[in-house]
Length: 182
Ligand code: FES
Image (cartoon, rainbow, N blue to C red; front, side, top):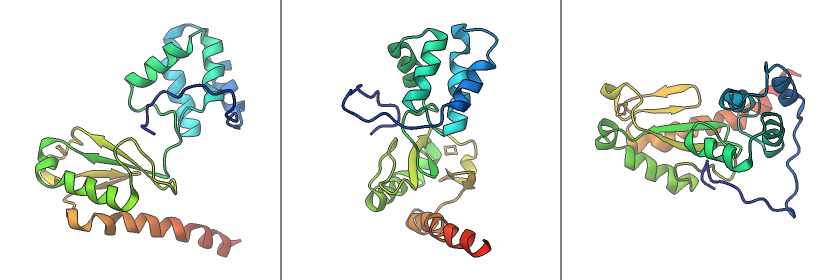
C-alpha cells in the first residue's frame, strides 16, 4: 500500500489494537479544541506510534471536531505523516538531479529486486520502508540516501544490497545479543 493511500473503512476488518493512553495524554495537554492544533497533534501522535493508527486518529477527530475527509486531506498533503506502520528502517533515497544521474534509479531498482518495494512501500518483513527525497542537501556526495538515522553518501549502486544487508544483519543479531545479556 502507498504510504499515504487513504484506507476504505471496512466494518468487517478487525480494529487495530493500540494503547491509546498516550493519545489521551496528548489531547489532554491541548489548550483547547481549535483545529489549528490538528497538524502538531498528528505529528505528536506519530512520534509515539511511528505512524497514525486509526483508533488514535478517531480520538483526535472527535476532540478537534474534524471529519475523516478533513483529516485524510491533511495526511495526503503532508508526506511525512503515515497511516501505515513503517518498517524498522526508513530508506530516504535521493532522486534529485545529482543523485539521479549518479545512479539513484539503479539503487531503487536493486532495492525493488531484492525487497519488492517501490517508494511508499514496506517490505514483507517490515524491515525497510522506501521513500524518495528531492534533494538531501549534499549533492557533492551523490548518490545519497538516509537509512534510519544514518547518512550514506557516494553510494556505489552496485553495493546497494551490501549496505542494506548490514542493517538486516544487525536486525537479525539484535534479539540474540539482548538474550545474551539477560
Ligand atoms: S540531489 Fe541528492 S543530495 Fe542533492
